[in-house]
Image 1: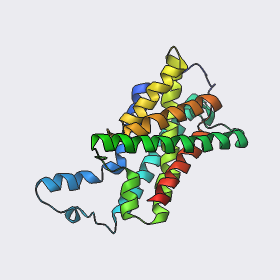
Image 2: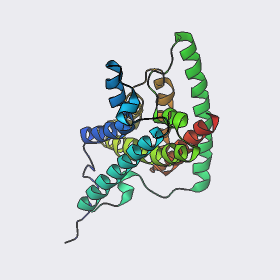
Image 3: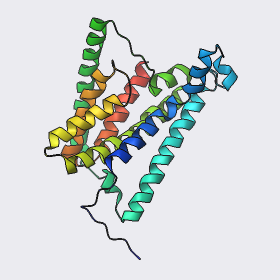
Image 4: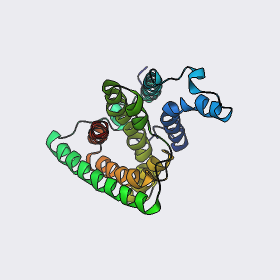
Length: 235
């Protein structure tokens, strides 16, 4: 029996999407837990099988597992609802127009990065929690950095934060701008770094505007990947 796609039906409840986003984002961070617990008792990370030589492989496995989990859960839900992948924002867009927005987003991101540096300097603050980008750059070769931060992370995060969470907010909130602002706040806060929020919030806003403009997460994935690639190359 063929399932008829109901466009008015919510693809995923907001609490479910938020829970999935937290799970995915903390999959790489979970690698630190044994070492953090061990540090309390002066136990070296190597006792837990974590070394500089294999650390990036743990990150890669965690990120790949998170990606597989997201794709599997979303594919299963789409199949049960009889919905196409466009339900989570995977739609074709004009390449030329999208490229202009990606270029604009990169400039906007660089401006936000300067703002972050100024705020951090004024506050005398530093980033408290290493992101997966920083972790992989420190311990892993370039190919692993690109695979994790340029391929996997943009796809996972754009599906979750724009394709599901923002879309759900757009369906339930009274004004699109409120939905974009709330989704950007969620995107920034769940990374659990007070300093980096200054950068993630405006980037989240820009990605939300892009999604609203194109009705697709494809340009956002391209911008997200381009930004992470720049981070990898600069570091």
